[in-house]
Length: 179
Image (cartoon, rainbow, N blue to C red; front, top):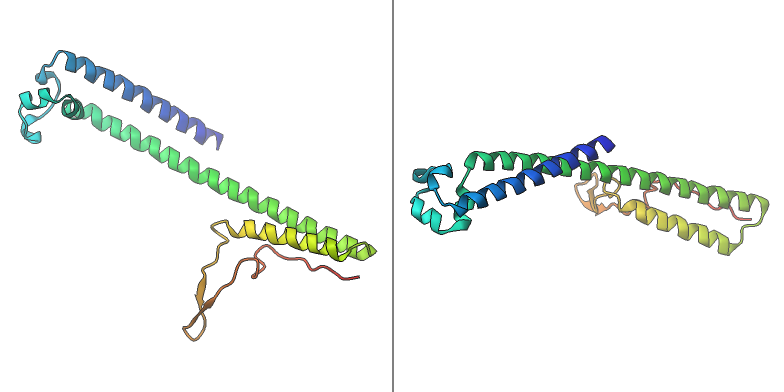
């Protein structure tokens, strides 16, 4: 992951630097307007050199088409690395969240079982562990790969509510043992 972030940062820095250099070069070319040095195919853009020279914004967008294509490719590469990095970081965060939720759910189960075994589990403590478990499962249900469709077809082709992942014991549950 660190290599991906490092590569993404290098691509971003290179894109930014090249973009700034190209814009500075275009500004320099516009100070001494000579459309023959701009590399524009005026027949292709259906404008005369004079029309292009009058409008600096149009001139900058049309001049140096080869360098503009290189910039577009650099932008696409940087975008790809950005997208990949976000996707990987999201996956890592979701995985870590699931791991923590499972650990806390197991902790709640173990605590409730231990307290019930020795007879120290009051109804208030049972309620607290149940509330904590429900909150953990609610967070867990927000993860995209856990979210269930709201309607699922039954054998007869009718749809019925699939319920929440908490109802389906997506993480695994514990049962509080009464005294």
